[in-house]
Structures are given as structure tokens and as C-alpha cells.
Length: 253
Image (cartoon, rainbow, N blue to C red):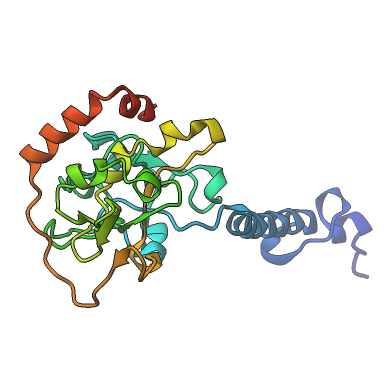
């Protein structure tokens, strides 16, 4: 007569019934919970962020491909000699956290190509510095020139001649020439002069090209034009003179 299998033997070690691939039910529940938790975190990251699209270093303008390839290695930021590449925070959402973003308060981009050279996953693609476009500048409502006509910093220092002035000294941005280098943002003193109101933005900002406001003070043509050569010597000389202004120096902090 065949020997009966004990209840404990049928259930397996510890009295638990064997499950899929030899895993216990408890292990499967823990794994499923972990997967659901990660999905929830991703959704929370998208929903809890600011919703503002990130400004990526040159060569990383395809956001979905960039996020898929970027491994948060921080190499691009470590080689940036102008310190314009910063790091995304949780305020921008979990999917952008620890990814490279452009921080024009700290510097501007001269398209030196170093960030692309060190990227190990090609999250930053090769680009032509004459046609590369990170984004486009647009004025904000605290621009001093729009209010008083008393500031021309962005016009004086733009290395690509993308900014002209109206009859009232209001900046006019040529979106065909602007490539999002951020020099204008870096030297804008508007936040300093209006800090008593608690402002944290400047009188000009860079937005992804697809998000650029069309019309108004921003002119846009659908025909792309090669960007002029950056006037490095003139730009650096003018920028150095500008940074001697105590108000602008304070704005860098």
C-alpha cells in the first residue's frame, strides 16, 4: 500500500504551498507589490512635477529618447567648463530627477561639444554647432526693458545677434538666430532689481523650441537658417564688462 504523503510534505517547507517557478505565494506578492510601487512612483513623478519641459544640453532635445538613454552618470556636468549644465531635482518630477538640465543662472552654453564627447550612451547626440538649437529665448513680464526701456544687457551681450531693440528699447528676439545659448538669461539683472517682490525668475528665459511662444515680441519663421558664428571675443569682453556691475554679480548667486 503506497505511503501517504504528509500534509507538511505536500505543502512544502514551512507549510506553504509551492507556487509559480518554485516561488512561494508570499514572494510573488512581494514582487508584484514592488512592481506596482515602481509604476506608482513613475506616475507620481509625472503628476507631481512642475510640468515644465526640461532644457537639455545640446544633442538631447528628443526628450523621450534622452530619458530612455540617460543613465544619470553626471559625466556631462563634470566636463562643462561654463557650469551651465545642472541636475534636475524632484521638483521637476521623478523622471527628471538627477538628469542633466541647463541652468542659465550659473552659466551659458558655447556648444563646445565636450558633453557629447563624454556621454557613454549617446543620450546626447552629435550636433552641428552652426545649426544646433537648445531652445529659444522669450521675455517674461518682469523684463526691465519692457517696463522702462532702461536695460539693454541681453541685446549688448547676445553672441549670435539674435536680439534687436524696438523704438522704445524693448528687446525683439529673432527665433531664427536664437539657439538657446542662454547668455541673455545669465546676465539679466531683472531678478536683482525686483527681488523685493520675491521674484525668482529673470526678465528673459529659454524655452524648448516646440514650446516657444509665437507672435508678440518673439518672431519665428518656419524656414531654418544656419546660425551665424559665435562672436566669442566680443561676447566675452562685453560679458566681463557686464559682470563688473554689482547688480549683475549679485544676480549670479
